[in-house]
Length: 179
Image (cartoon, rainbow, N blue to C red; front, side, top):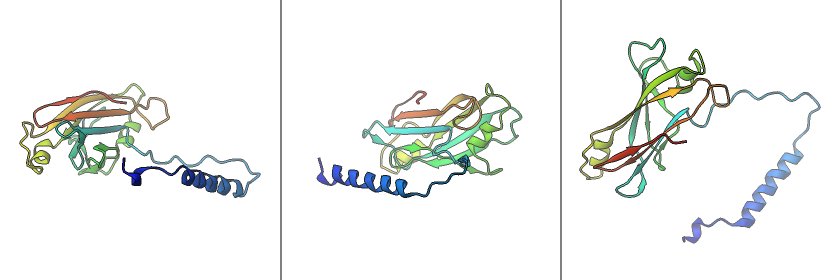
């Protein structure tokens, strides 16, 4: 193993002691604690992860599109989001393209009940991605359609996380509902 990747336990202990000291020295207030504002989630309710089975590595820099196909009172044009997989082959946040600037959590939060269902498609631009690596691919794109049941924000009633992992090769792919 490369020694530059090993963790120094004494350094970790020192950092933890510094954090504990900082917290202990923080001024304490006798006033009632206030609830912090709801922070943005670190990930959207719909995420994906792509592994390249040809190399056994994450599929980094793969363009991905997420489209809302159906919803109660769905707009005439589909709501679409874009992302590119990170170095670990993951998409945790989607950027809206065209139409009103909204987010996946906002769409799901606006649904009428915790039992509401929406249909989505996630499309992976596999052909150009493999071609850029000099590899022939049978799949110009891989599209996975699925149903999301639930609404709201993380921690609220009806919220669920949907993770779409894909094992991708130039001649095959496989997917399942992840966690």
